[in-house]
Image (cartoon, rainbow, N blue to C red; front, side, top):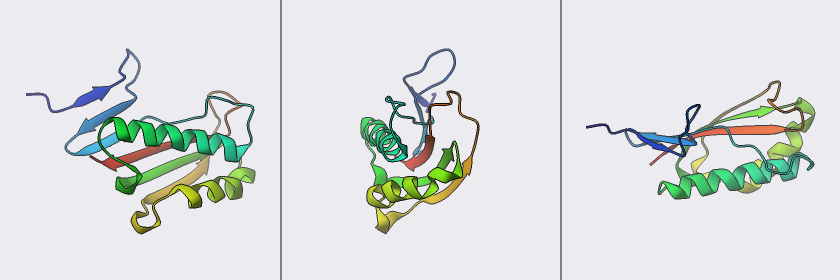
Length: 116
């Protein structure tokens, strides 16, 4: 029996994979690339909330987060949104760095792993 659940799969990737009680989400980015770091981060977090809800989880069960920024100049702005969004009683392990984005208008991409 295959106990791997793939959600939103296509030939290249799955939006989420659930296995062994762990949820692996693909990187989340904004839809409106014209926004500032706060808006783009809020949109990514909204997508994370929706994806976790789809598989019966929520942000309090996030185990780890990897945050990619286009530039560290956005670090404080992203953190302001993070601090308002994260469940402080259940803070996940987190890393943050810079990366060349697939589209230069993206300012942030967020990848999370959560408990089911």
